[in-house]
Image 1: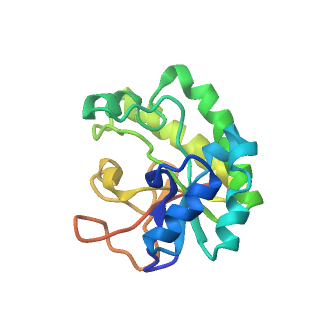
Image 2: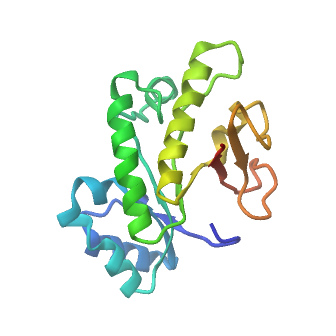
Length: 196
């Protein structure tokens, strides 16, 4: 993302359709948006025109958002069990969805898509940690194959060894341009880059 760009999350606007999305973003006074991309995959007739309508209204699409299937944000335990790439029963479906979202991002010219990876255990010996990092590698590679960077909002990043490191078990992570490690006073994005 561009440094110091303020963008509103499209899903936070709770629009019923593309026209209402443009209307609500315009009313917010913000001129950039992070666009939820799964609706463009799931309901292209309803949301397909949102990109053109946003751009025609002078609203820049700063980045995209990938929301894996099955996420439940009703409580911290539910987020821990269902957030991001955690759901075992939906892993194959989420891989297929990631490919579709990456292609949509590529087709509309986005260079960055972010998502919530899910809780990644701190303990290097925890089998769930290995599973989650493997899934993160797979999805990162799927986006990289389409020429799209894949990132993660920073609030859960401390679970990747307490601090983002230059390379974590085959996944490179870095913050957005010029951003220190995020805490309550900083904003950044952890971008995962496929490694050879």
